Image 1 (spheres, rainbow, N blue to C red):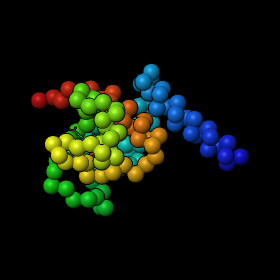
Image 2 (image 1 turned 90 degrees about the vertical axis):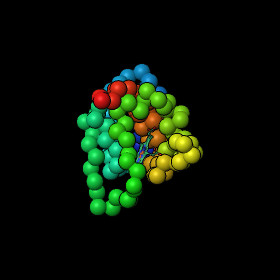
Image 3 (image 1 turned 180 degrees about the vertical axis):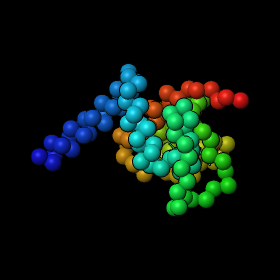
Length: 122
Ligand code: HEC
């Protein structure tokens, strides 16, 4: 029974990662993954009403983590996937955190980030 459940869950993830290209609805899953992985300890996504929530176990960083509302204007899911696995860098600098979740979660998360195309208000 557990095996079946695992398979259903796995298929769901695969579907979600492809499905997010088609429907905006699965954005909710990506949002959950973002929060579950505590990306919001440093980043806000104002376009999705996600604010920075400082936690006690937060790693100190002297760099300002950018709001990700418009990340999709500059980066695609492929680049984001690599960056979050520390295989890509910005101006020679890798991301502070390596993604700790599953590959499926990373795919869904990268897809969500790619869809964020709100121009920053200045
Ligand atoms: C400990 C703080 C911290 C956490 C946690 C964190 N980040 Fe970051 N992130 C940063 C900082 C600082 C930068 C800017 C790095 C730079 O410009 O070199 C950054 C940069 C980024 C960028 C690139 C932004 C750009 O301008 O291109 C993306 C995308 C990103 N983070 C996504 C995430 C995601 C998704 C998570 C959760 C899995 C996450 N971050 C968790 C601190 C953090």
